[in-house]
Image 1 (cartoon, one colour):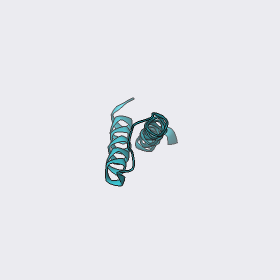
Image 2 (tube, rainbow, N blue to C red):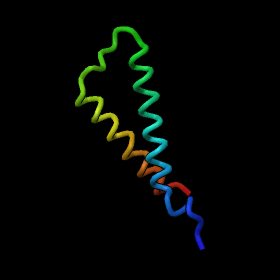
Image 3 (cartoon, helix red, strand yellow):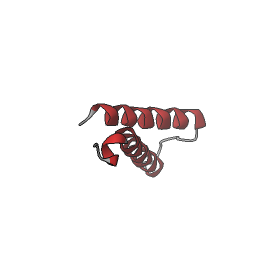
Image 4 (tube, helix red, strand yellow):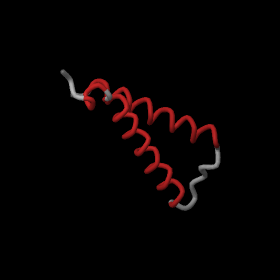
Length: 61
C-alpha cells in the first residue's frame, strides 16, 4: 500500500511552486526600480510556478 505522501506528489510539488512564487514576489518588491504592479503578469507568473511545481512533483520520485 502506497503512503499518503506518494499519492499526493502533485500537491507537494504545487506547494513548492507557490513558495517559489512567493520568494520571487518578495524579491521583486524589495529590489528598487522593478515594477510589479501589472496584475496580469503576476498572475501569469503564479500560474506558471504552481503548474510547473505540480508537474515536477508528479514526475519526481
